[in-house]
Image (cartoon, rainbow, N blue to C red; front, side):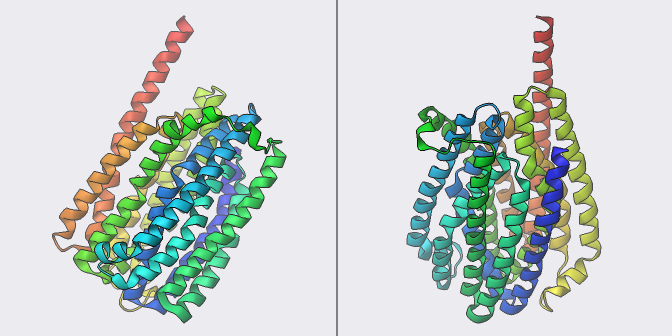
Length: 429
């Protein structure tokens, strides 16, 4: 029932928001054109990369520990709230300043586009809000307030769409970036209000005196490896995008950006389910309900496989029509088809990763992501040097997630057997 409630709000609210952003992306591509839309995608990818650096795993930390202690240790929850909120502000400020300073270097040396330095600086100004927002989402997830997450995301998507299209029409790429950032600003304000309501609802003591310095160890044991694991994702995608730009130009980057948008759409339902997976698994594990834990995990894997596979088939069948929506210069369909089927393995990998995190094995999760990063960059290098462009990048994503999923499966299988053996010994004792 908890899963069903969360899925309902995620699909009822957030799905509409994602659809609005998808339509906005189509209109924005028509306004900017193939080359400028590719530039906008690279700047947005750069912003998202530094969000990962700045959030340092705080969202996942808040989700795990708030869900685990919200009923049995309210002072602990208060301490986690102060810890995650405080560090999101500190890291957000630090990363924003660094991006403002090094924007010319990023534009010239990594994108071969020095004229984009001002655009990256504008994105840097918006980083603070997006980093704080990542911690806020973790807090709301920990409270299992998926209703507020859905409503807030919907409101923010309306703001993002409106300002992004107006900005793109009047101020080109720079205006689109401002609009993109305003959406996150609206989301941060809405999330702040929702968090305060949950603090009152669960009678959490909202005072600084309840902060426990011993909880700083969580930053090393959980937040740091969580951040490092995340760093192996968004920045790696930025790197392979930059490799694509250098190898084939912004035109191919624009094709990949469209394919990636539809990958995100396909992953929406699995993502909505996985969003509630961490708090449910953590609270279930805390109550020592072993059979329920593994049952929830199996349900999630089964649902993800069915949903992503069916949607991938639909996208592949109508891929030509989809690409025509973006304009006459977007004819190639192979990249969008490959990325569509890659979502099957991406969704399974996400569930396995969440399970590993729920057991606090974040350093293990980091090792898996490090291997994945090396694999995807290696495949990207090979395929791009064969002149495959956006198709090669999509194929590299597919291959890397297949291997990543297999590695995680064997570890989860080993973990389940180990816990079962330990439980048998305790019963015998």
